[in-house]
Length: 188
Image (cartoon, rainbow, N blue to C red; front, side, top):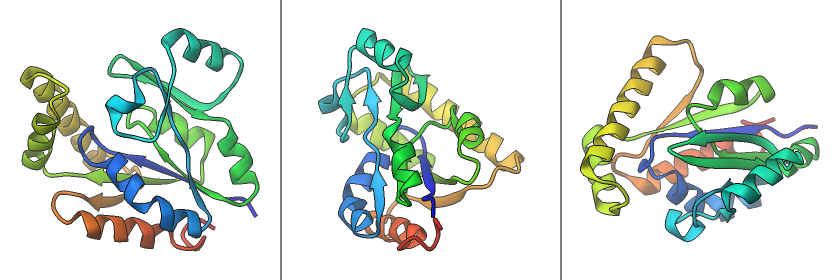
């Protein structure tokens, strides 16, 4: 029995990495693996469990087929190791921190995937982005505008998502993710 890909998306600052870190142990006990992204920025700067590569090394890995999925966003390159295909074939569910811009390609490659949208109220998102101090205020406003544009696109489309709100009660968001995935029931 094949596993299912769970494709987590949401704006920068929505708490995807915090959510994955908080749920990691329980998800592992349920047979759900969390794939480590490969990224062309220091993993320490991200606060996520990622593999950091130089742009040259990333391109080399991409060229030799090391990634099941890869994309460019915000001036960086991201990749999901092709090992996820073996995990899925072995029946494990696999959760990835994906990209909203890559969603259509991910659906084409994994038609049975479960897309999970982590949503955050705009005021909360602005506050989080300001607090982490990675971007200037104009850059933050651009991020918020892109998020609003994506939200409008989602509302007008027939895309199928499970929406988790992470605006206030983080523990509830973690519980909601774990319940959604469940011990292979939602992903079987």
